[in-house]
Length: 358
Image (tube, rainbow, N blue to C red; front, side):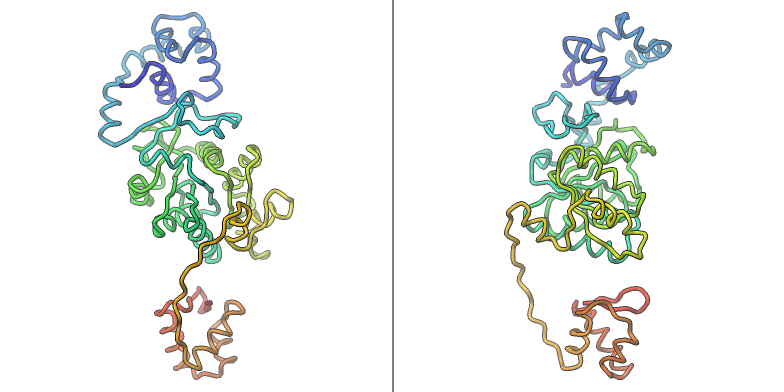
């Protein structure tokens, strides 16, 4: 049964009332539950507040079916908390515009776990993808819950890595549950709903808009003890998350990137100007919180003489096929064979442009 107080917040989210206006209205009454009755009864404060829109809103409220909404919630396993709920994350209240309602599907207890946000480019380079996976894997293995925005690129990699490692992840959406965006991540969203937590401040039928993503980013920061940017361009939307983190006074970490790559301008700049701590390995973050990294069991890899030469050469960094051939003096045919088998065994990786790395 939806309480009278909750009905006010739900209705306001259904009409997409701004946080500031919601706060102004609720603060005028003794409790949020009085607002809708006042709206139906033609309270002068609300008539003046909404002006020409008052009659439209009154009719909308009269036709609004909370019973239908409850049935939808039950069928789709949707729940919610409002700013008045004891489960509402305290850190979110420190934002200038804390969401007055959060709809969720999944394990709400994850809001109070050891959360760290991983954000960055929607179109990361190979380097960005590898770095995101590396950090997400290590952080999950050491007890962190990964928070991100269910976008393409870094967000998706962070969520998928957490799930792959049987860890926990929270996805914060810039849309309602019936209007999932981007559509290519719908299956990922379903998996997170089952194994983690989906969260949004938007009413189920609300469609994503340009402004909803920066708004979503403040929640990502507000649910986390720290924010990590793995790769971001100069104007990346993920920098909004960094700004909200600084507003909240939580840690911001950034992985440095290639200085000639535009995709790393954002991450490099926030390090350069002191807006983030530079991290070059997951242990840098773990040490910040006094966490001793878990040791992973390493499989012993048997390499023959030529494979060992290839491996040792690639340990210095990525190399092209011709460079490897010139250094090792292995015939082209044999080198192709070695590189292929070493890839299959998971010892090295092939990169775009016929380059290789360990």
